[in-house]
Length: 281
Image (tube, rainbow, N blue to C red; front, side):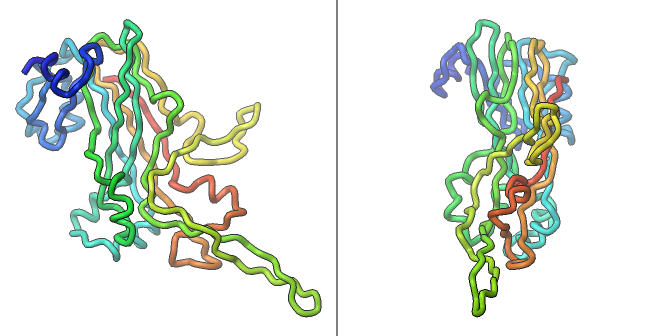
């Protein structure tokens, strides 16, 4: 099937020229390309099991890929693993589930937005598995192929990279009450909770001198940067690294993910800390 027939079959306008790759097997390259950049093959097929040929600068296409190098915080891992029915190999392979939308703009001004998602779909508290089924049931997609000519590749404007929170996070608030004789008592009361869901990662807040006023999930210099003037045959890789963390309010519920609603610094870091590097190979 040629690429135009494939586009029609998938319901994709002919000008929005892209083709998905099956990374799991890497034997189902369905674009009309004769070969792929060896950087792409080494990234997604390091064992060399694919039969697809490579050339130093394969013409006619640009590969856009997401490389998920994130890990789980030890405390979160220790909280979840006893509840998950995983083999040792599956436990070692657990990765936070990352979702992001990328815009590929062509030289004629048209563009295509692709939603990438990668990570472990089985990384969730079993009590909430059914509730989060719609999000976790999305097929993994960590690469796509755009046919030339590509003017730029960037994170979709107005969107955030998201990480899946695999646990319920309890929200407490410190409340003061008056006791006998005017004595003031303070207790934490449960107010609400954050259910397992995709959580937007926020960039650090800074003042006019670029000093950090509130640390959040991504440093101002660690956001995905746009890549202009992409040469045919290139592979544009968004590499995300970092650690998925959730808070534990040790004073109240040390054995459950939880935090104080009045603790703005802790609330701002829910989801963990990440950085992005965009490379062209």
